[in-house]
Image: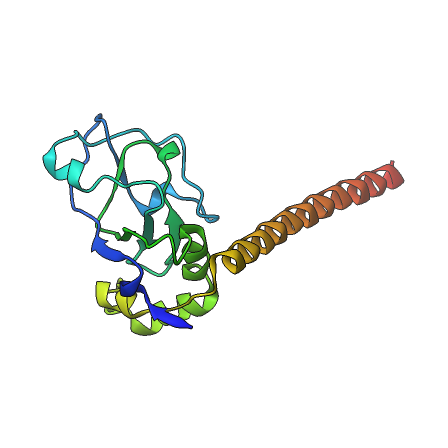
Length: 186
């Protein structure tokens, strides 16, 4: 069964604000994430907490999607980031119906190459392509039951661990080969 994202959650745009040197809230921008979608923990809060900002604070399980540019990615928010709001570079998926879909499963689906292709085909603009809110709302999401979603997420986690182990093995093999090659010329 597939269902439109607008049936599973509400979607809003990030906000435009002018960051300052200090503040109580982090103004999330795409540069605050590395190529593996990990948050840069050295980022400091740079917005004052006022009524406007408070209404847009991200909650556990909200998903931010980089909607502008050539590198669209999705990240599930959690409180470890601290108080934060999404900049206008993002679309925010909120109020996710967690009885139907896990935030982490939705994040995984939004980061699939097929979803990226959908975003690229439906983006507006050439200089800086942008995904509109309706494009995200109309995205069809496959909806297995929660147990199957958990199994899929476990497989994804194991696959990531496998990739990390392969990378470590490759690095160690390079070190050993270089050691032997250097030893052979001495």
